Picture 1 (tube, rainbow, N blue to C red):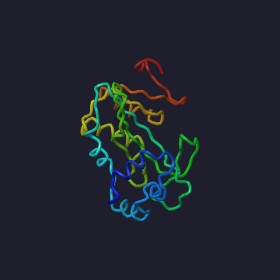
Picture 2: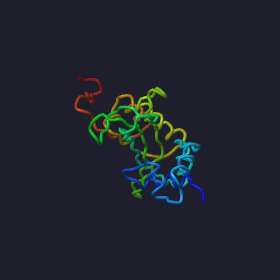
Picture 3: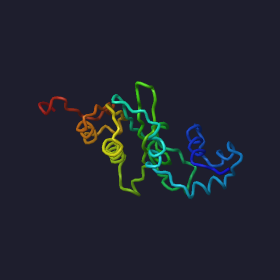
Picture 4: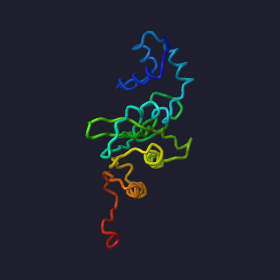
Length: 193
């Protein structure tokens, strides 16, 4: 019996607080920490592999919504993990050391079902992209590559930029995004400030 991608994905989905190889090897006692480590060193998990594995299970809807959100995987005890950087965590309401993850969730409201369908690792030093760039890239991927039907885009106030909202409107989609207090909005079409 060998360790598989399914074993690892099921662990990540079911674990709420601890994502370490040591913890995983405690739950899957037939696999040692070293066996799992060797597997993860050779395996590459990409957004396209996520899509490849889940697209057959996706139940689409014209009324679907997509959610863009980010999270910080807390790595404040780490000194040498790649991609760890200081960034703001909304969960902690402060800056901490962690890995930034931007994800896209597809929601079928008629069936009360949802799927994580895309993600990006926030690594501005490595790829030169902002979080807004990643969301725009995932949105274009949904429309032009995956060709998924959806009606609405839901996102956090972090993504409330004119450029991204205009892009969503140009795609003919409705967007919902809380705005920060310091944002100015012109709903008069340029008649007033």
